[in-house]
Image 1 (cartoon, helix red, strand yellow):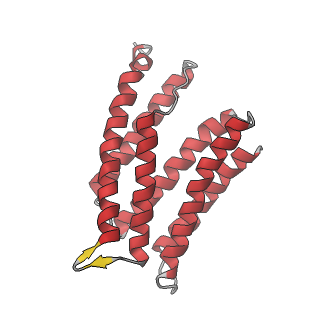
Image 2 (cartoon, helix red, strand yellow):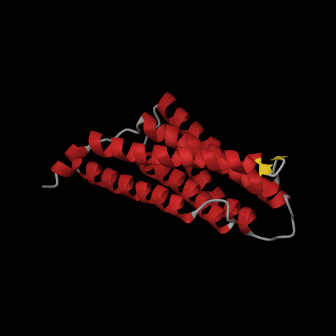
Length: 188
């Protein structure tokens, strides 16, 4: 197993620890969500790193093509589901985001059967960036808020960025479907 694939697997292994520290009441007080935040950031950085290493050193593998996006989806979906539990995000937003991931994953499976490679779009990359930053802020809000009067700025910024991510989620789905409609035509 090459280094990018090891980093991808490391990201998957970090997810249960992330969820544990974010949700478990283990007597650590505000340190638990901070530990969860550190784990989330490390896992997110491995996503960037594994892709750069794989492309730079020509270490792209079928395993990596499959596991890297799956690891990303597991990390983001785990975080968003935890944030529902912590009453930081509404469930309907998370349902839309997860539904988009299922639709895209299904599309990619159909495309792969026909040896069609579907690259990530810029809309999808923007969506992921806004999701990650929103999640970081909302996890940070679990441990530390920055209040101006009655307004928790960390929470408000996190929610605003999550709504931006939601809009980008919908735009990226529409863009993805339009650009890859030939995949569905092949099924007729």
